[in-house]
Length: 207
Image (cartoon, rainbow, N blue to C red; front, side, top):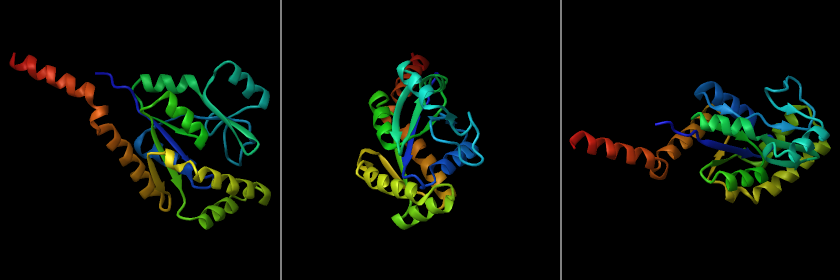
């Protein structure tokens, strides 16, 4: 039986460590990552096509017009979007795909893929979040203030997620998120095809 892959949506406050978490999950458990497109400038060390597809505003808007995104959103003066083709090809091939996207985009994903697993990543408190943003050393105080303000708005949408995970210890967070995904796969509603198949096999075996 060729099982369809699971779609996992990871969202969280800017500075909660989502990117680091996703990289660790790919390395340890082999998840497939959907690389997002964005109009923001690359940070030091980021590579086009690996971390993001870095697009001009015009290029991004053209992709919107051609329905090239599953979802897209504007966040702190920049656009972010999830390319459609890669996600659908990976799921069809039976691979689990992680989407690292902001909260409003996650709601759009849930409408299109009702069986997607929505997980929200957070720091243990607001002070830790602010310190992490400051520690990046790549953003001005004004941008940090905007990100903290946006985090306050995002907190109102956490209740739309199925799971909330505190990223205080990276290794622990990686294993917790992986455990959630594996547990979700084992729910009866996600195993009905298997149940029908094994019932039929047993009938055939004794028939």
